[in-house]
Image (cartoon, rainbow, N blue to C red):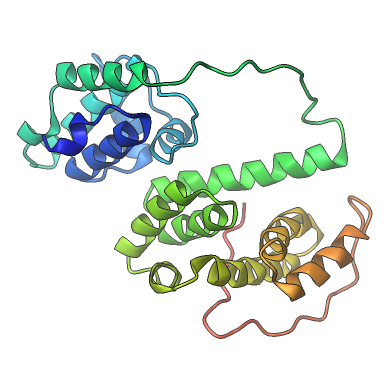
Length: 264
């Protein structure tokens, strides 16, 4: 095991789990979920759970049952694919590192208040957007480079550098052109805004059912100073929720920035 695995902090521990998965042959999220159902594995590992752990979405460390399952699944995948397991670390070693990382966590903040996720059109829009992002995570976890690149774009424009770096790495391993361009760009958020605008256009062209997702990408681009995205967002915001919009006049996106659309 390398020194990376000896670090006790929360970010270092998550980085170590990312490294463990890579050393075990980078099993897809669906493969990890399937292997976690085997006897002797403490907890199942749904794709969304694995993604949240590896991209740092969780403010707290995962509980030990999830970590133990993660370690066992990585060992099993390495065995099935003929990779060495000696450097992966034992369950006991990982438990010691998990305890060290847990001891450095700040106290859990007190959360008050509640909200009704389905009460208003705004909440409905949030639900649809969340569902779309969750689907991208499942696709990316199963090795889809286009979905991974989209998650990197979203992370770059929401300031989540850790997740952006992870998903860029995943997409760039498959030589995804936009991921490679983002990784090489001196101002990646600027290019990400252009790509988000192109995604917004593509979703708007899909019709009224996709306007919520179009607004989502336009908003990301507009918040980073993209003028055309801001204008498009103003037009869409003037349309009552659920109503039809007159066919827009699209200006062509810059060469190489018009991604295809996964249907959510």
